[in-house]
Length: 146
Image 1: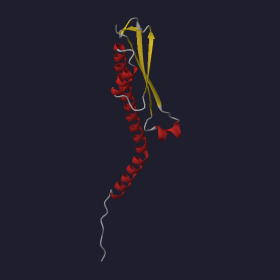
Image 2: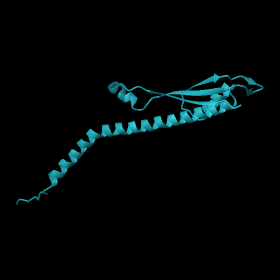
Image 3: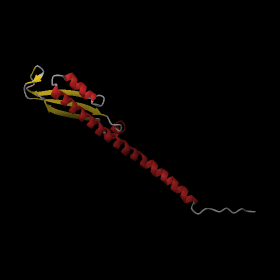
Image 4: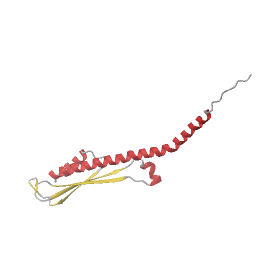
């Protein structure tokens, strides 16, 4: 006695469709992950730039009140939350003489912060596309208060 087996009409088509989906996912997943990492890196660059800009404004504001206190200006910039590895430069222009702690002339103080940002995707893409770390330089100038 023979048993008849019923075949489902779409059973083989469903299996092939699942295999096709896996192949498509395997081909597109690296591109999607690269886009995701690039988006995260762009957000990190923007956040670091905003932190640098805020820090140099804070340092320049402090320097406008006390232009001779370079250690205090550097400390104020560091306390404002700059990323690690940031260097700060302070430049005074104009006549910055002071008598009894009060400035006598017209003086401008400029605080510049420089930070080298290394994206997450650089190590992966540097060999293919030659991407290098990004150097950000932000400065703020204020006139010394008299």
